[in-house]
Amino acid sequence: MKNTLAYFIGLILLTSCTQEIILELPEMESQIVVEGYIETGSAPYVSLTRSIPFYQTIDENSLAEQLVTNADLVTVSDYNGNTDTLTLKLVAEYPFFKYEATNPTIIGQERNRYDLRIEVEGQVLTSSTWIPEIIQLDSTWFELEIDEDTMQLGTIHANLSDPDTLGNYYKFYSKRIGEDTRFISPAGSTVDDRLVNGESFPFFYFRSEDPLDPDTTLAPNDPRSFYWEVGDQVVVKYSTMDYNSYQFWLTKEADEQSGGSPFSAPVTTVSNINGGLGIWGGFGVSIDTVNCTID
Image (tube, rainbow, N blue to C red; front, side):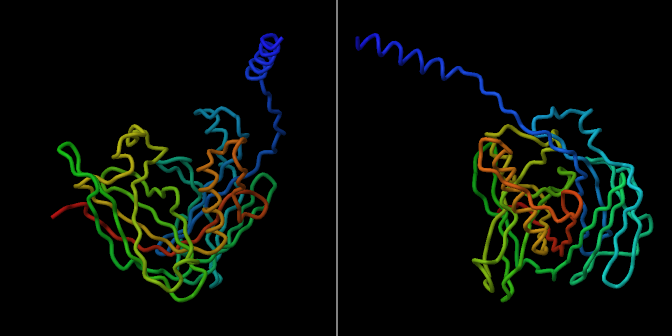
């Protein structure tokens, strides 16, 4: 009797383990996704795409269908009353089209507000951002972590003095000169000053690979995928931003770390676009160059 009972329990467990689970996810209406920025010393730019369902196959055709190149009007206005109209331009990196001003009069400045307005496909999308004061890094340097015959690798360190005013928000990026085509921000690169308000504190950068540049992608277990090599020249960019931009990047990083899986804790990326999704962000930028050398 015991053997028979064990047989049936085992059969039930085996059947339950092989049962097919079908998830029926509701169809989500496609929305316009905005990715727009203005940095100190630079003119604004905006990219427009469409949101896609989570399980849709991503290939060249689906990426092309995401692009929005038919905006009727894209404008940026500043606190001083200036307005620039942005027109579609072809660029070398994804999403390959950006809206930029041909002869910009608006260049990003500290302590200035910038308003975005987009008219596309019968919709009006708006947003505002603020560029806070630039906070310069005190110092940057390279420290060796791995010293072997075949490779010498390390991390880039920096020191920052946070102002004695709570509510500063930071994001850091890096780019290897002659190797990377654009600045990359790794996971965990968006931080605030709640724990370090008014203090001087050190931190360090790991290297992060560009998911859109397969020529620079290494095997996941290759330490060069997250350490810098001796001989690298690295441009470090450290940015201040407003609270809405901070919320977008913080939740976006959390979503990316979860893998966007429906079985993980849900993370909703916070958008600051009225009428759509995405980000219109202003950044106060500090830049330094680090030579990865050892004595």
